[in-house]
Image (cartoon, rainbow, N blue to C red; front, side, top):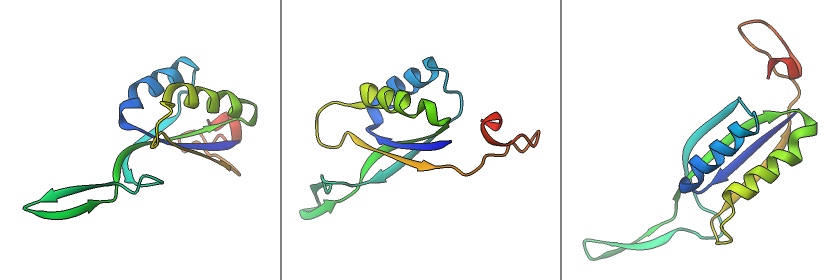
Length: 112
């Protein structure tokens, strides 16, 4: 099993969520987050003083899938989220050792 974490632009929330649901991914965790990458934020003026805003709003998706679906899901995320502009986001993939469904005690891929 692999955990896929994608951090994308907020305006990509609905298209990406719809694409994942269409691909029958039914276990999705979505968080609103703030961060910065290569953009390093922007400069604003507040009461005449320059203020560097170094975090931008983003949306984080967390999905755990079987190993054979990883490339498919990466493709869906890329297709749904890529604008070609700086700030499109990142995808992180990590190994999941185990998963346990609390209600039934199922383990592994059956618990997803």
